[in-house]
Length: 462
Image (cartoon, rainbow, N blue to C red; front, side):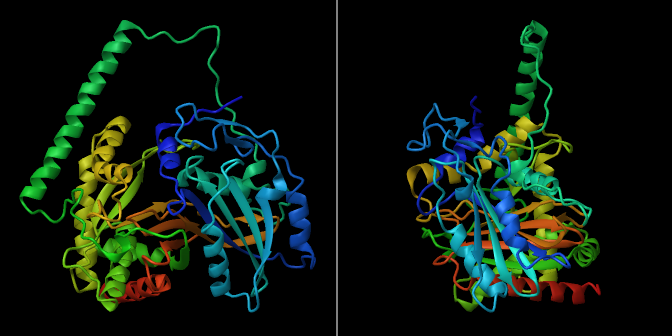
C-alpha cells in the first residue's frame, strides 16, 4: 500500500541537494534513572532494535533516484533494516555540552539515504552528570515540526514508573474514520456553487492583503515587511554541507513577564533575542547592514486538535530591528512588525493563508528554481520558528527528559535557522547554521542570553 505526498512534501524533496539537506532533527537530554544498571543504555538499545516498526516509519520513496518524479510516493521497504536506523554513540571525555554539540553537528551534516526510510535515531552516552542524549532526524517531506512534537509527547510518559513507553517508530498509527467505499461522495450542484463562492472570497482576501503590503512598501512603512526588503548579509550566501549547532534554554515565566511589560507575545521576545544576538555578532564581524534583518516565521494553520502528519504551514515576514541600538527599542519594533503581519491573516481561511504565504515566498521559489539563491538579494535573512511542546514533565523508561533542542534546515542563501521548542516551563532554542556562512555560531546563543538579561533589567523583571 502506498501513501501519496502533499504539495509541500514534494517541495521539500525538490529542495534537497548535497549542501541544502531537507531533514530536521531533535536533541533530547535525559537524566539516567536512579538505580539504573550500568548496562542500562546497552539494554535499551537491544530492546529498541527488536521493537516493531509501524507506518510511516517503514516506508521509503518509490523513486529514490528521481526525487521530483510526478509518480513519487511512499511505499513499504521490503528490506527494512532497523539496525541501520537505530544507532549507539559515545562522547569523548569529558562528555560535556560542547562535545555533545560537536557530535550532533556532525550527525546533522550527513545527507540521508533516499533508498531507505528517511529517519534515524542515535542514543548518545557518556554525557557528564549521569545523563545521556538522544538525537533523532527525519526528512521534512515525511513530517513537519508540529507532527514531530505530537510524536514526542506520545513517545514519553508523565509517570516515571512507566516502563512500557516506545519511541515514535513503534507507535501504532492513529485510527482514522474511513469513508464507506460503497458510497463514494458525489459533489452536488449546491456544493460546487459554495466551493466557487469560497474561492472567489479567498482570491479577494489575498488580493486585498497583498495590495496593503504593496502600499506599505510605497509609503516606506517599516512595520509591515514585504518580500525582498531584507538586506544581504553573510548569512545569505551559498552554503556548504557542514553544519554547526548551538543551544540555549530560557525560563518561560521570565520571558512572559517581559512580553507582557512590552505589550507583545512570548514569540516577540524570542525574535528580539535573536535580533539582538545577530546584531552583535554581525557588528563584531564588521558585517552589520544599515537596514534591519528580516525573519520568516512559519505559521501553523492546523486546527487545535489536529493529529498531524505531512506539512501544513503558512508564513509571515517580520523585522528583527537590528538597525536599532537598544534592546527595548528592538523589542518594541518587533512587536509592531509582528502585529502588522498577523493582521494580514485576520479573517483568512486556511486556503487563503496558503495562497498569501505562497505570494510572500515567490521570490524564494524563483531563486530556488533558478539556482540564484545566495547570489542575489534574499527574500528574508533567517528562518525563526516556534513549535509548542509538552508542558508536563516527561519520562522515557524512567529517565527524566530535561530539555529538547530542535535542529532545522539551512539552505542556499539562508544559512541560519533558529527553531524554538517549549517544554515544561522553559523555551529551548536550537541554532543550526552553515559553518562557513555563520562564523562563531555559538556566540549567537551566548549573546541571546545577554539580550534577555538586559531586557529583564529594562522592564524590571526578576
